[in-house]
Length: 115
Length: 114
Image (cartoon, rainbow over all chains, first blue to last red; front, side):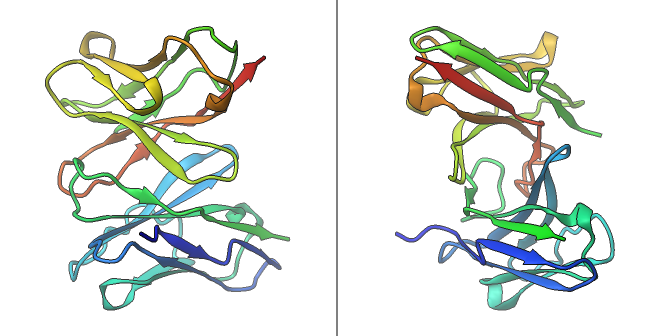
């Protein structure tokens, strides 16, 4: 079946502009995660959604970052007033249940470049 | 706070040689440990995981890893490397059992010489 999809695959934006990154999880997966992969920082957890529960936002690096998940499915990560240090690959993952024993399936990522 | 250290940023091995990638974690309790692989242009793929029980775990693609509590390590091994194993490898720990949130190491890039 279809895996996790992310769009766009690449995004180039000017410093100070807002960007939206989209994640379509695997159908039926209730847990959704965002991670960021950047040079020097490795892979960092950003935010986690589970059903109708309040999201775990503990990894968001600043208040310029926000995310929502509509209808328990598609998620959008928004970065306001982008900075050059926001340049990274943003990865989305989903899993059938929010349990560590359940595998997360990762999307191909969105490469964000801030000029 | 929980953390994961992969001491080797880059490793080169010859095809057919054995491989060991190191991973050390910092965590108070018994952690949930993972190894992921990221091939060029591909997403992250789970190789194997450890939760409890037998400290030697088998994964996909011929990989195995051994959990050593006394050394806080979870090293990944493969007896004979293939050229297709060239990729970036990430060790990860999950601090809780009921969210699945992952904390990753910095990654080790594996290059395979013919």
